[in-house]
Each structure stands twice: as structure tokens, then as C-alpha cells.
Amino acid sequence: MKNIFQAEITSEVIDRINKLTPTTTPLWGKMSVSQMLAHCNVSYELVYDNIYPKPGAFMKFILKNLVKSKVVSEKPYPESSQTAPQFIIKDEKEFEKEKQRLIEYINKTQQLGENHFDGKESHSFGKLTKSEWNNMFYKHLDHHLNQFGV
Image (tube, rainbow, N blue to C red; front, side):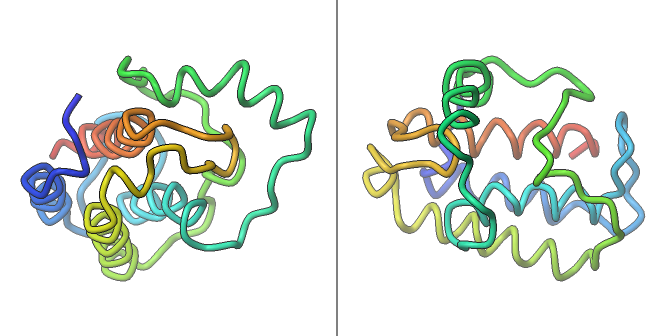
């Protein structure tokens, strides 16, 4: 899997994001392009912004034992796969604002680097290795950029 912590991969992902327009339509799924960008921002909000309640002990146990391996592995997500409730974006979002936020989050993550994330506690899955963080970040972005044909 490509390493989102490497500057050239970050640039490649941002170039793909910059190919999106407010009228880009998905190849599958129900989200608009602005909703997709907002959806991708949730991954970074969970890391950088304290706006979501942490799961309780039972839910964290379920997430770590049933969901974590699907999220942090190198196996790609299937089209139209299920998502966690906080990732569901129901209202329409402002394309340029969400796009800029996502690019800023991606750049911040790359600048902090993989060593910053190695062993860092995630919101839902406990401590993750730098490889697990990379897989989670890159796989999610790649999945949705592919969804929108870029």
C-alpha cells in the first residue's frame, strides 16, 4: 500500500483531490462530491479535533475485535460498504471548504510523519502502528477518490 506519510504520495493524493469539481459524480454510492469530502474529513477530525464522543468500553471492544482489521488492513474496501454513524453525511456541504479542509488535514498528517503516529491511540481502535495508521488514512482516501473517478 502506498505510504501517505511520504511527500510524493501526499502530493499524488492532493492532485487527485484537485481534479474533483463541484459537479463530479460518483461511479457508485449515494454521496455527492462535497459530502464525500466531508466524509473523508471525519477520519482526520477523529484524530485532531475533539468533537466526537469516545466509544464506551463495550463498543470499543466490538470495534477493536470486529471492525479494526477491516479498517487497518491493506485489503481494499468493497464498493458501497457500510460506514460508522459519525461518517454518514446527510446534509449538503460546501465543496471548496471541505476540499480545503481535507488537503490541510492530509498535509498536517504528512508533516507530523509516521513516527508521530506509531503507537498513537486512535479514537476507536486503541493504539495503532504507523503501518495501520497509513493503511487507514490512505485506503479510505483512495477508496473514495476511486469512487469519484480520480
